[in-house]
Image 1 (cartoon, rainbow, N blue to C red):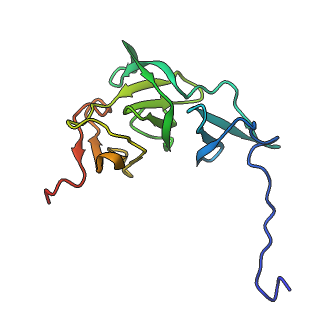
Image 2 (cartoon, helix red, strand yellow; image 1 turned 180 degrees about the vertical axis):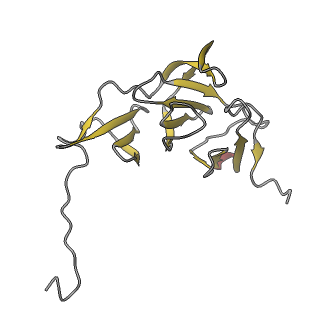
Length: 184
């Protein structure tokens, strides 16, 4: 009957070997070639699962979540003396292997507009975006352009989509602009 109805049965398996802990509330998923990232809505942190021969297993050493992180000078790849404290993360974006952010494989954002650049093998670092002139209301999500040169932040309570452009130091230093500004 399946062949007559052109039905193909799929074999489903858990994405993570042994499953995720019951304390995890999956908000968002991002999948790469060998990694699966899970944004936990309860802790505001990101969990990384690594693909193995037996399925994906949780990487206990991966650090990407709320906390205090140092900043980095993108031109020299050296840590600055300033640090940023991030709250619970609200969104994440998987990056291609070659990207303008050095070794970062994932960018995440909290509700105050701080970005967290995460990598499983190097230190995680943060960057605080300039607040819009009218301040954030309640940013919910962000996305990046295909060239990774612009970040778009959705702030529905503020009735806005904010854009930040990448500067020569490969950071988003400048003030944001409204995407729907009426200037065509």
